[in-house]
Image (tube, rainbow, N blue to C red):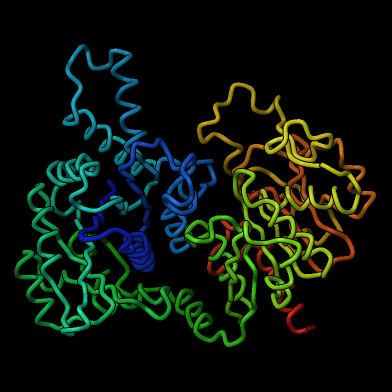
Length: 536
């Protein structure tokens, strides 16, 4: 039977619970323990698929097609696990399932209540996912902050889990903020005490407390937290701001985190920690001296978490080649033909990421045209690829008013269109072409050079496709369709001849990039950007 570690947050949101849960998973994996992760989000949306990126940042897509919270991206990148749709649970999913059961009469006419019906549904899903995963330890992050009304059913469910599974099979971590008052030069522990008291009022005694702070805490402060929060002194851990975030697992290991968890859960673990691969990679991160400048042209750049996986994927590729990535976050609405030089004259590469809706697409097309005309390395992802094809149709082939039917249903040249036979009966609510799909790579292409194998499987999140009725015109004018989905003959990768690096992909390669294994398209893009910089 799997054992469970529950991670809650207190005082404020955005404390880095996902990074802590990933660090803990990395450490346990390094001790020979099989780990799996889950995330509970208390909002009533069924999933974040229909949310604006301004709400929760990017929507992360798993291989099996789940639209999930961005924390699952942290889990996959750090622990290198392929997670599943069962790993992302929302209140919307829980309540929808319970109400469907009630409509079917599964509750035999009884009154349906939060306790026990909602809490039982939460526990059932936890246990089912744990059994399928075959993990020794399942790390469950509870979204939100202790005290939020919507999170109460999850806290009650994990309280019941301890009652049912026992102390040695469950463990509670509480992440809190310890604010530092610079005027008095003091770290204040009172918010942590109050947050823990709130948790105790719900029947949960934390087994360990993780203190998020920008300065190191004194032994007296830690002892005070231990005393007032009723936690062993060895169970009080600091999660300080790190110069390199990837150093956090080592900082926690030095405080004895993995040993503490192993003792509590009575795990049969390796006596030594083996994450030399991670240590070697972190050293390469710290050793990067050169930098390369990339313009990321998007419409959600005010919230950089909207492009978290893209940023991470570029970082992975850059460090693999000894370079830091300097990102110019460019709001596409601000870009025009008249000011394009101002934004792009000094960059080494231009990336246009995915997105939905027409707003900001004119600026993205200006950026794409600039990259094409000035031979600047370009990578277009999802909508970025679609706009690259539309820009090419307009300005090279001469198909004026070419567009996607998503923006102009009456366009005379529907370069991007909805393939109706593929989506018959599918609801709009977050259901797109999602998850892994096969892509066959054509030989003697840039894509073949980068991937070195075929077929490949990449993750998708889109509804509209390239219209093959225009394929011949594009090929006659220098576009190579180097990646194709064989089941539906769909364009997956396009590239431009006679350009150092101009590639668009319909999928999201950022979701399969890992720190020690950068996605080939990102690696090729950053490599081309370095070459461009050195050649300037």
